[in-house]
Amino acid sequence: MYGAVIDWRALFMSAAGRAARGPSLMAVGVLFAVSFLYEAVAGPTLKLLTFWIVYPLLLASGACVLSKRLHDRGHSGWWAALILTAALTIWPAPHGAAGVLALPVIIWAVVELGVLPGEQGANRFGPNPLATVLA
Image 1 (cartoon, rainbow, N blue to C red):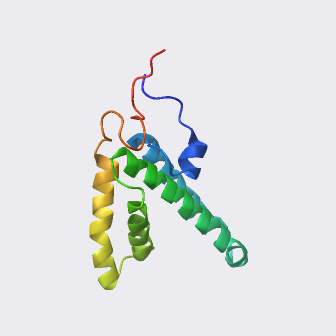
Image 2 (cartoon, rainbow, N blue to C red):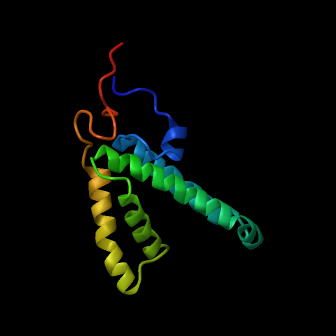
């Protein structure tokens, strides 16, 4: 058995600690799904009233998820700011020089956070989230 039960509230609302690849990828999927659902359901009037509430909450949650995953890889959570800036630069479609500059950051983030495993053992951000739990 790996790790303890996932604390989803902490994953979405706290940048402290580490998060394994699987829960992090699920959390990113949830954030994208909420964003797409909001865009599909909210009409122009509702967006005008709620845009400045919904998207800052989604960005803050995204920063927390990215920070925890970066911590699991041994990096500072502040790198999440670069990743989110690159993502916002190419959203909804990349264009021009900004897209060219953001693309390497996005590729690095996908490989670093989505493909590579976390550091083995504890690091300066906490214990390995996949450490075997002794019952």
